[in-house]
Image (cartoon, rainbow, N blue to C red; front, side):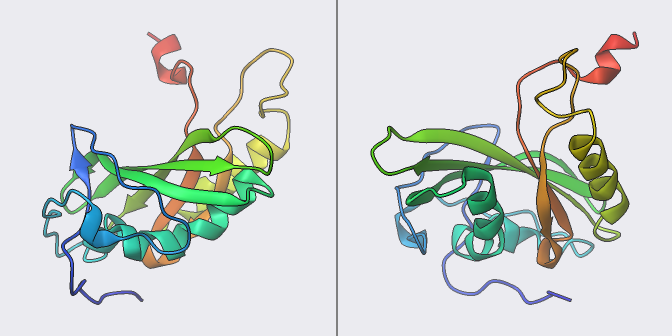
Length: 173
């Protein structure tokens, strides 16, 4: 269980507004970022760490590398708190930039879904099963789920690629 509070630089995150982080490779420079205090939540004591670049990057970097393949240069550009329900759950967006040798740089966003009562492994497994089956970006009918990337147990979080499209529940109305 990962319950220690962050010491040192205050966590970086944005809520509602975007702020860019400087490019970095292995370890982000927390002193060069725009910082805002993370919400104090006794049910989610890991939340400040998930929003702090130098804590989140080592937890999530291997998952990002799996997504980008053989990217030579991989950097975390931004962390953004998208939704937050105190004591229950949150949604965090990690913006990543990567470049393969001889190519232009690419950007993508990863969504981390965290909940206070523990890592939601069953939803991650369901999404993984759907993605590995017929509901991936190669689906003939164009209906698919976002690609699940893995879990970050230290943050009670599973991660998925952010995609454009319509939310399925909007089709039910």
